[in-house]
Every structure is written in C-alpha cells, then in structure tokens.
Length: 631
Ligand SMILES: [Zn+2]
Image (cartoon, rainbow, N blue to C red; front, side):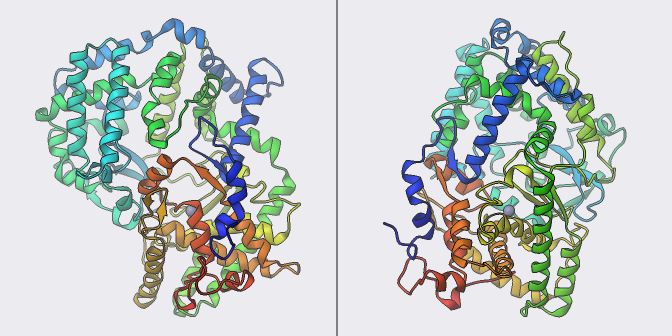
C-alpha cells in the first residue's frame, strides 16, 4: 500500500490504476479522458440515430452535418471510388516544373487548401489585441519536436524510419514505382533535416514574449527574394500588408531564402507532391485511412486505429464542431448548472482579488494593476452565444462526391480565416466546442472559457461536498484565472496587449518565484522521459495559483474539509497512459504529467502537510523554506 505521505497521487489513484484499461484506439484513460469517452459514446449513439432518420434535430446546420456524415460513413462508396478523387491533384503537382511556376500558384493553392508550404496566418497583434494581423510561421517538420533531430536521439531515428515505411506503403498504393518512392522520400527527409535546424522547439515557442518580432513589409519580403510575396498577398488579401509578425524569425532570416528558391525546387517539389498525394487519405478507402495513421499511432503507442464508425463521425464532425457542441450543451447543460458555475467563477475572482490585495511581496502599484486586469477578465461558461457566421454557408450538395464536399468546406474555413485580416478581433468566437472536456485562458482576449463538458463529475457535482467541488472545478477555474498572471500572462495587460505593467523589483521577485517552480519540476521522471521545467512553467504556475485560490475559497464554507479538497484534487488527475505517449508529451506538452501536477503542487502547501501529517523523510515532504506560493 502506498502511503499518502509518500506518493499522494498514487495513494489516491493506485487502486483505480490497477484495473483501468486503456482503450485500444486511445493513448490514455482516466479523468479528462473518461469524460471525453462518455461524450464520444453519446455522440456516436445520437448521430447513429440521426443517420437512421430518427430524432433528427430541427436545425439546418445539423441537417447538413448529417448529410456530410452520411457520406463519410458510406464506406462502400469510398471503396468503389478508390483513389480516383485524388488523381487530378497528384497530376497537377507532378506537372509543376519550376519554383517560379509553383510560386505563381501559391495564392490559388492557399485559398483552396492545397499543399503549398506557405506558413502564414491571421491572429491578434500582441501589441494591439483588438486587431487581427498577419503572422509568419515556419513549415512543419516530421518529428514531434526539433529535439528529436539531435545525433544522439535514438527515438527520433526510430520514428523517422516508421514514418518512412508508412509513406513507402502509402505511395505504392497511389501507383508510384519503388524507384520514384525512394527518390521522393530521400529528398523529403533531406529537406526536413535541414528545416529542423531553424524552426522553433516547443520549449522556445512556449515563451510568448520571445515570439514577437514585427517586421515592416518591405524588409520582410527581402528575406525570401524569390518568393513573390507582394503578388501572393495581393491575391489573398486584395492588397499588400504593411507589416508582419515573425515568431519563426530564425527560419525566415537564416533559411527562407534557400527554402523558397529555384535551387531548392527538387526537394520542395518532393514535399509538395507527397503532401498532395496523401492529403485526402482520411476520406478514401478504409485501408488508406488506417495506414495513414500508422506513424501517429507509433508516436503515442496506440495499437489500433479507430473503428470505421468512429472515424466517419470524427471526420464529419470536424467542420461542424461548434454546432455539435451547442447541441450537446442544449441537451446536457441546464440553466441551473450555468448559473451555479457563473456564481463559482464570480466567487473565485473575488477570492483572487482579496489574495492580490494582500500579496505583500508586491508593491501597491503592481497589486493595483493586477487587480485592474483581474476585474475585466471575461468568463464564458458552457457554450458560445452564437456560431461563427461561416456555419450557415456549410451546405452539403448530395450530387457532389465526399471529397468535393469536403473541399468546399475547407475553402469556406480558409476564406473565413483570411477575411479576418486587418479587422477587429471577434471576441465572441470560441476556440473550443462546448462538448470538449477542457478549458482555456486566452491572454490576448483576457478571457476564460469553460465548455459545458468539463462541468461534470469528478470536477463538479452538485452531490459532492463543496470542498470536493473546490478541489475539482474550483481548482480548474482558478487555474485558468491564474494564466492571466503566469509567466506568459504576466506580460499582457488588461486589454490583452503586450505591456510591462510591473515595477522592476516586483518582476524580479516574480521571476525568483517562478524559477523555483522550474526547478521543482525540472528532470522529474515521466515513464523514462524527463520533465522539462521551462517548457511546463506557465502551466505549473497556473496550477499552483489555482490550488491556492480554490483552497481559500473552500475555507469560506462552513463545512470546509481540507482532506476532501486535496483528495478530489488528486482524483481529477487520475490517468493511465501509454509509455510512448508520455515520452512524446515530455518534449511537446506545456502541461506536466498528471502525477506531478498533483504531487509537486500539493507539496507546496502547509495545509497539505498538516492535514496528512507529512513529516521530514516522507516522499511528499517539502521543507517549509522550499515551499512556494505565488498567487
Ligand atoms: Zn492551463
């Protein structure tokens, strides 16, 4: 028996872990995943009825979803057409004869969602969060992170081999000869290895402030002289932008000129041709669908692909996500639950305010500014007020094929993304559907968002004690609020713009504290991989603030139980995962593993030591001088 005093997470969740079974098509099970699995069952059951013409909702958007779902689920038809739908695209890319010919078509390819290795997007300006501007990213790499490309990384070599085998098999199905396949893959892997030297690692991109590199348009276009950026953007935006923000500055200043050039054409063409060939895998035969997931299954150690029915549902759900979320909220999220959670959020903000008012390590003016920011955080609970306007345009034409309809849906969403450029940010748009078991803080909107799906047991249950609810949904709510003041959020002001609102002394004191959190997590074991303290610091700071604040809120109730609070906090994190998956997450995920999100966080609290009688020498012991509380 594990003692609570030695490994709190394991003592609470060990019994469950013994018998928990990870589904064959999933990388993990437990807490968040259990809820997600339940919602998946509900959605499959419901949409099955809809396909059969039963209980069809009286809603034009959902009826279009059903038409699309009928097509993704029609495997007989998918088998019958085989690779026919993608043949014209393959031919089109085969025929491209030079970089300049390709470059002259980039805008057209971009607007129709065809492969183009053109990594631009539109999102709010860091300096003015009310306005959408152009951002220049970098093309993607094959392996999950740049760290996999180092000479001594055996896992990287192994994964790249699996990727290559999968592509060999796939390209064979599309009629390429063995010789062509070898040539294409050699080139793609060659270019990928070069690219990996310049793109950002996940650790680098986890520090938002360091990503802000604005460029005047004329200066930027000089970085890739052979890429006709002026004409491409005149076609896409109707005009040349005046500036661009370049988070992937290393790629653009050191490699883009070579990457986008006639000299690199052979390698780039190989990437484009493979992308074009495999871009519709998920919509074609079942054999191609399953085969195309081989590499990602290897990454997460998942033995099996989803079955046909599930795959057809998810494929159809993609473009209609928010509409299905609204349906879910309408069925499962009562007005009473919404009111209750709104009250909880208000309480939590109130508690947060009182903690900020008494944070004696901060000067009064910094406290004042933090409170100003806290006061205007906008909470969104349950579901969005309205769907994005594009949803009305997502009309399925049953006379067209599955791929043709999917193509139209892609075009609608791309046109929508580009139409936002140089326009005010729509603050009512959600980045998650209401049936997703998650929550987020958007530093640029200074908004917290809690989809209906997370407002369930064990996070939240009217039948469990108030302290248990505070250890669950309370800690989650306060976690999201804390993101406003984590290592990233601290650099944005109340309007969501990048602005230093700290005194120098206070920021130094903040940095000292967050550095201690980096140290507490750095190098901890996760299934043989090491936790990266820097990559995970923003989330760990949010967890710490979340528990501190939720604990204080719980104390305000008469029936407060410190035990129920911490026990439920450990319970929400119960998780069982595949080794490969956890090893991959260690290099890409800004969240620490569930075990450490529990154990390290609670070990910073005096209340925890006292309640569970944790003594020096116990596994959970942290000496009082090493305990850190920030918010
Ligand atoms: Zn978070």
